[in-house]
Image (cartoon, rainbow, N blue to C red; front, side):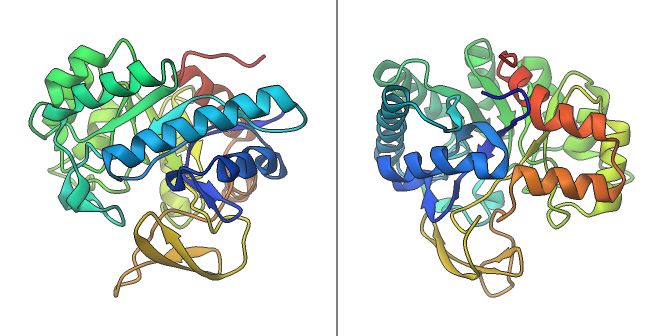
Length: 305
């Protein structure tokens, strides 16, 4: 990996490919073309899909990784898989299939199966800490994986308990979770009071407005902010209709739309664009570089080579 490259640890798809397709060719396309976005390493990220489909994703990513290492050439390194679903709240599933959500009380056997069949491939597990079995799961698996709070209705106290139990990260902060208000600080308030927590931010200026991004970059520790694309298969593609797992998503003018209300469904931005936008928003370039390169690796306990 080039020291000038960015690291995207939350990316579902790009260039017409989607991780949840469980396609070896799709993963290869992403890996070989992500350097066009200045991305040198990434974590293929799943959606909330069936357990059998999750296993097929792991098999496809492992096969693609073997091909990349054998054939060489220019490609973005696969760091491991980010499991965004299915251990999330159905009430905060958004574009993801709420009917396939699984309570954390049943997560252990699934994670153990993944580790048995694909050792070392799973890196990040998203979880809604208010759900049944979540705290026990966090305590049991915190030393083996990055446990990240996501797609959750958790309040401040629940988030703090999750951090005390060993969760070390928040997935796309402020998206798919309750807001921070003057009497209900939510996960953002819990992050503010727990300075060692890594926080993903989607920095396209759409998922979080530029003034709020400026606030977050000012208030959060600069070695804990992680820029992610959260992009879907429409990234790097023309406007049109695309599938995100089972959902039909419209891409128009650099934004995703799904459902009758035109809700967001991931992004079609990329790390290079986000870095440029952050500069335009007035963010300190040194903080941007850490958030796009060093911090994503630090969360995975890796360093730039």
